[in-house]
Length: 358
Image 1 (cartoon, rainbow, N blue to C red):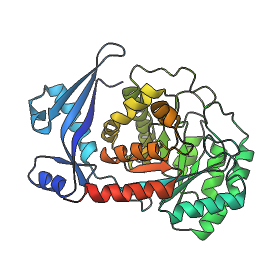
Image 2: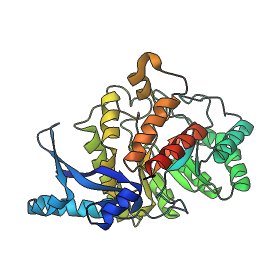
Image 3: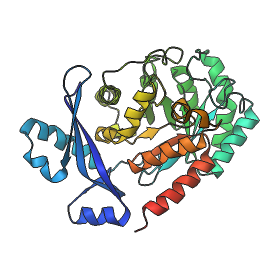
Image 4: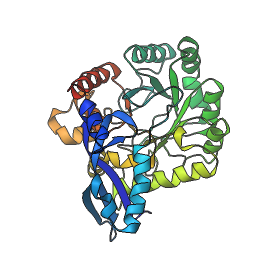
């Protein structure tokens, strides 16, 4: 557990950001020429559950005490360093991951794409609508869901994966699974990225499978398991506890000769979190930039939207999803996992154009 945590904040965009950087009044965020910052929020853990927060202009870092300044400078190096592309996926512009659930019981679209032909057509639609990566899963991990057999999970998705890799060889395929058997089968059939919602905690063979071929993977946070995760989740501080989880897992991977630049991090909105936890994470999402990895968020159609809008909820929650995506974009989040690819991509393109016009 760390004592200090560093969050870049007070962001600028487009030409104005680049001008500030040239004048040495701001730093680029993750090496992205389109976004810069000139302040840091420093969190300090005090007593259990108590966190102190202080804001500093970047010009004042040198005035801090030696211990705090040393930690912040180390964090700053990760915050500002350019994120390397992953399998050609570049992070200077927001990227969309299309969520494809080949299940009978997923929380938002269970059963809609359970047949192989429907799953393939939906993936095709996502690709045509702007998704640069498709995340395909054969087991529901919605709150209260039960684990299915490894072989059943693989059989649900096998044909769709093979057909997609044949017809769209340049599109990245992500496999949403917690199981080493399914990971191995997916990698053998051309899957490019592994997305393990358990954060490598479900199957102790998973990391060995990923590490063997140095496959990029999404390090996802979940408290508990799908069938228990929403039963009174508790944290000292959701944001910082999840940061510590990522820090431990990343260091574990590095010690096993797996490179940091192959890891994407996803704080797991809705996975073992209540509304207060989700809002704490989202509002301070830029804290995770100091881990030095691209950030992915999956807010699409999540129940926290319903908890906010109450009687104004809609089945597809496109408005709430887009709002959370655009907020993430302002905080430098690089990858967004969504169901309604066309609508979200349209929103990002328009918003980004306005944001970067000076």
